[in-house]
Length: 244
Image (tube, rainbow, N blue to C red; front, side):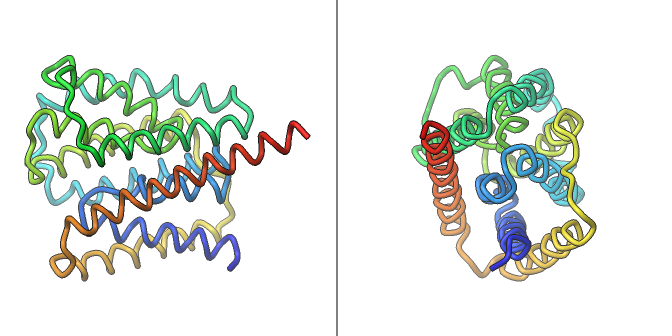
């Protein structure tokens, strides 16, 4: 399978998952796109696509956004986005793969366990989660896990979490695109990505209600974990090759 077909398949699957559950595009897409395109281009593409998909999903649920609760999350994220972007420019590719894969792997494991942390409550918890999420989003393309952990510790219901996570996704990805730039792809590859996003959205909306949400969420986390471990493996392989 060519790189372009693999790219389209990853984007299609991630888009389908996003429309099935309301979240999950970056978790599924980021590790795979980093392996396929490299850290810089992969993260930049995830930022662009995740921002667009978040905006589309938010169009139907923006009235449920908790502006007061989201303010400290978003402000903290905006402040740390430049740090994550700076890190990606300083480290060699092998180290970046290790950092990104490690961040995704640890974040997914924490979300899987539903870790309860008293520090992730109240305004202080929102600032901490937003700051870590902004850094991770611009550095690794995945800023959702810290927000998920905050929501778990704040006792948010799924109905409250999804629109607020989408709002956060729009804000943090806009600033991440400004910091990281737009990936340099030809028109054919951009077209493939756009078509894959559209087909994935249609498939996800068609499957919504037919597939148990909990099963889909488990699949999202398993795919993200596999992708994170794959990125770590590629980073170790590249690092080992550089030493030889």
